[in-house]
View 1 (cartoon, helix red, strand yellow):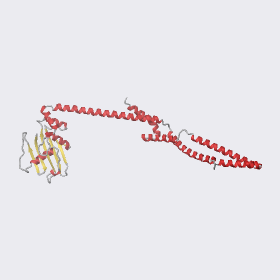
View 2 (tube, helix red, strand yellow):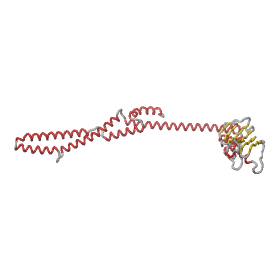
View 3 (cartoon, helix red, strand yellow):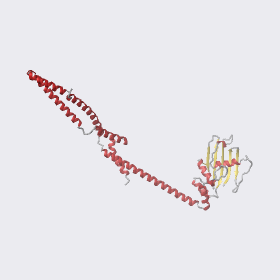
View 4 (cartoon, one colour):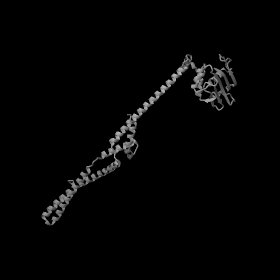
Length: 339
């Protein structure tokens, strides 16, 4: 199959041109004659690593090129088609180049290819046996090629491979569709949960600001109750309250008026003052009772505002957008409804 080998500017070689017969070819020579160089050059054609030291000293560029004759191996020609390689008159030309700057190129039939592509072509065409070299016969996939080629089943196997590839692709597509369906159902269920939560919240336009205003008012109410309580205590305290002092003063003046009628006006004035203080105390109690009668407690308002805050943070919107979110979620749920 290897018809010729050309080496130029590599290692110690200026230029070598080798031609091979279709039958067995044997390279002989004493140690250092260049047998390893020839085998190493063939390895480069198969995609092995190309060290910059391969370039001959003083050379700007070096290369190794091999021409392989495949006229008697139509099975390999067909296998090359799968690698996007076309033969030219039944031949394939492999070439490896290296420049003085260390850069290298791999070519197949004059077309630059990636090193992996060259290696794939080389693995298919050449079985290099030698110490520390790869051996194609040890590869399970190569053994299958040899067996099927010998039995004339390569085309049937390739047809089966194509059907298997198509089946695997259909299986992957089915799994992707099922995963997408699961994802849509999960999204639908999440949206339904969000809708249920928003329905339970029953938000109203302007509610958040109204709750904040009510919270401030209730905070003021607490200060009001404290002041009313202090005033009531100042009036009604048994020992030191104003009402108690005025009652004692009125009692004393009434006794004085009994003995000295000229002081009757003072006693009457003190008694009127006592009545006024009682009226003030009653009004304070009424004000306290009215302040206590509230539709919502401060804790209820704080809980409601906290719920609204959690909903806004969850959906990353302000309160006004939260009011419109329900309609949007209903449309999404309808579009994702699995039934």
